[in-house]
Length: 449
Image (cartoon, rainbow, N blue to C red):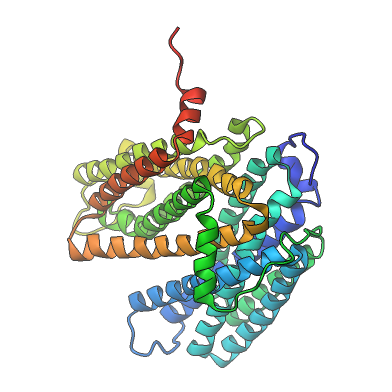
């Protein structure tokens, strides 16, 4: 455990207690999305057999292949992370990643769709095993004062790695010998991640006497029971999972929102996605400064309020834009033209601030889960969060499908529906745990003299 003095956030990047884990996490997040994006490109343009399925079905199959391992294996990994020394466990997972990426190279060489999907499932499995470790180990290496800053950096780095992995996976197959660039790139990043993991300091077992449960169903129930021991922790998990619900909705719908509502060209999609990412990074990094050296629950209602304001305004701005700048004969507006219109900037600010709000909202929730979980069960609690996150992401897909396909709502109407759901969920969480609003009032509401 570090000294009680709060450390400046960015100084953590020069310290062994944080930097090796940070780099290890970056490599894993990059590789997952690098491989997934490359696989989607292969299915879309590469001529790989799709078994007669449409690309929309393939997209959902790929998403499910990455989510299912979190439901199956995160609870099992959580108990192992609590029982055994964590840094050695992480190194074992990174060795497994090298083996998985080697199998991925074989799958690319054979041009086998089934084997490529198996490799994607295995990458999801190693990510599901790593996730409880990376967040359970942080409180063992960082003081409570540094925990918010460390989580802010982790969320920022992860967001950047995900985005860069998506871009790299798409671009790698657009050059000559793209298959081999994907294979070599994934292996190189996996090897660099393993090298970084060798420098992670030891993190002793939290509960050496823990009885292991091999049955995934029974362990999932036990893991969820651990999460419910502390009501504050449980409701933080629900709030955290809602963040993943919102992220899934907005990231999934932004491309179609840009095309069908704004009539914007593909470059506009890219710009809005970058703004969303930059916003998350800004919000996550702001948390350490606004927290003033401790974990600040007041930031959660602040972030939630901003999500509501800018989520509603994004829906209204989209409708206003479509009415003022209708597409001519189905043509798409180029970015150069849209940049001259004030309504474009309103949409851009809404997307950026949605990201900022998300960062402000999720980082303190993550830190509260880490700090207030029982140390002997911390990794299992985080694994329970992984399971609930996965379920919320599935729910996001079902809500989008039902609203747009079943009820025939427009995307702005979907955004307004999500805003209503956001209000209801936040009311539930804040009523169950009044500490959030008490701290928000003490910190941000002026007191009348």
